Length: 376
Image 1: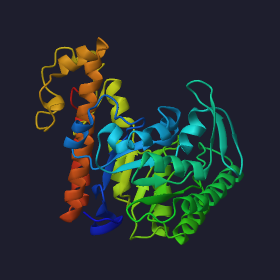
Image 2 (image 1 turned 120 degrees about the vertical axis):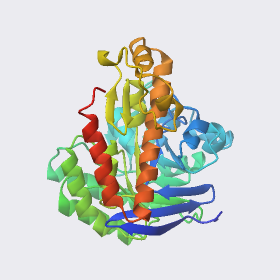
Image 3 (image 1 turned 180 degrees about the horizontal axis):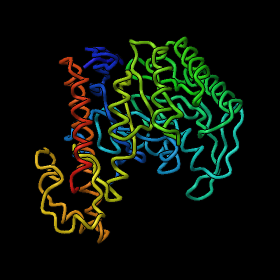
């Protein structure tokens, strides 16, 4: 295994890209979906299961881990890989989005952001340098710059202010990260839904010659067509030889549409959160197990799935577990959902390699559309 961080573009099909990120702890096949392990765990899953489903990398979060158990404690315990028993690559989010969305009484200025924990009210300070320090203590393999993510819609002046601040924080984050050959720090493109601001942000980050680039500030309330238009305007500005990561996205359709526009990496809580709330993602589309129509349905979610949760349990049983608020409901549906997401990504990668991504996309969308007509 390489001792350096590298991205190799192996094949293209239209704008869709098939690649590999190689790092000392392993190879990430792209396009890749990263299950979210916010606080050092993918909710309702054993990490051995997550690996068996085909996950090459998981995500952890600075905000949650700095609050508990604390980055310094994780470092004393051997780092996040040892702590969580996941010896493969980990990407850490900088914590910026969570500070903006979860923390109480936050105060932001050029230096960084001060906030009170949503858990116990303890006051913390998070700067670009401290975020990188925490990610270093966690020993993550791909680290994110600290940025300011604002919700849409917003005034242009506010979007521009946050974008410019994020660029200055990117420079400080890169300086704090320094030269770490086996790891990477990604910059985050901001600019809301304003095309010229997105392009300006992407151009400035590209000039920094970072190892990878993220598109942030989407999936924050805007319609899908706005997100896709933003990708179409932004991605051509980013270097073709570097990985492109769309943060916090999304549904299976979001993934399929974004790959078609040139995105390489994704993360989202959707498959795990949906599983805990009785919703299954399958090749037939979404199945709401709370619905009474499933009460006596002996069919599994998908008899062709390699995942036991989708293949071996009846919809009637899953419906019962959901309605009875049994913990096993969230466990089985999360397992099934992550299996479907990884199966989808594997299919996407194979289709790009063989030059039939458009056909795969059409077939997948047809399966979802036909599923809407079935009693599921």
